[in-house]
Length: 59
Image 1: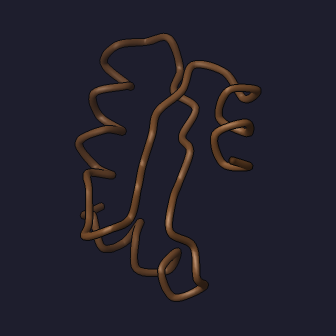
Image 2: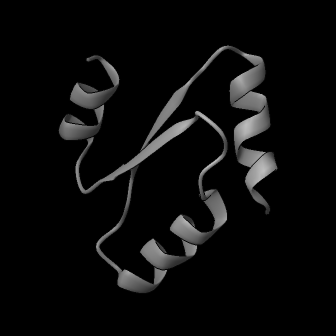
């Protein structure tokens, strides 16, 4: 999976940010972060729980 597979559909539907809840496993975290990356003005933040992720998206 490259960055465009994640970001392009989201951008096409008008989204400008993504909150991703990561598992505690460090190897999985690194894998997800390397796949998602950053594209243009699309903001991506990583969280360890759904409550913080939801709060950030709703700001």
